[in-house]
Length: 111
Length: 112
Image 1 (spheres, helix red, strand yellow):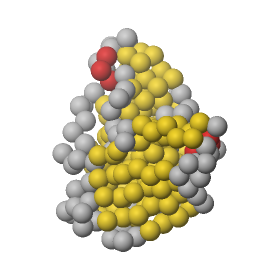
Image 2 (cartoon, rainbow over the protein chains, first blue to last red; image 1 turned 135 degrees about the vertical axis):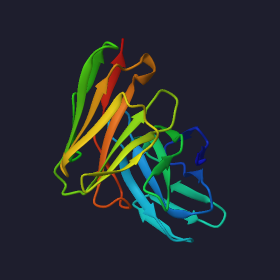
Image 3 (cartoon, each protein chain N blue to C red; image 1 turned 90 degrees about the vertical axis):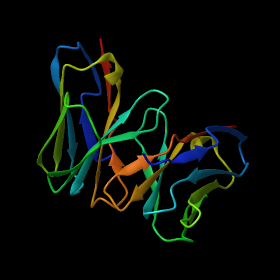
């Protein structure tokens, strides 16, 4: 069983605040790390797929970093907006063909 | 519009019923997946198909039977399910297995 942990489980921030959360995963047999955004009553939406140690990816106000040697990835949101409210999921892929998801971080941004 | 369509959106069935969930994608993807989301648990991969061939079965009970007749369609056949099988079942697809996955809206399944 692969252990993919996300913290915190939930987070309340004020509009305009910047925030970040963590995904930790096994550091051995790494192949890729995925981030998804899942809004209530919608389907999960891919944000990033990261494969190289030291990778840094950005999409608008959202960015992510990857450290495969120590087994963690950070997701950052700059200047949070109410529409950023969602559950953010990370998923670890080893050399096999399976994604193992973390439990998610539920972000709520108050206007 | 997600590009991945799941039907039905909601399903209530008894433990002795047989039903099927359907997933369809028109994104030209070659890999398709079934996931289960139970309350307060992480999203859990059930099955993976690459080019219509099943490549992963994540120790799923035989009362769940997948079928992939072509690269655009994926079914999950359900038979004699248990109350603990009540969950949200999500289908996803990707170009190849290491690309980002596109998810459907899911089928909310309730077993009476």
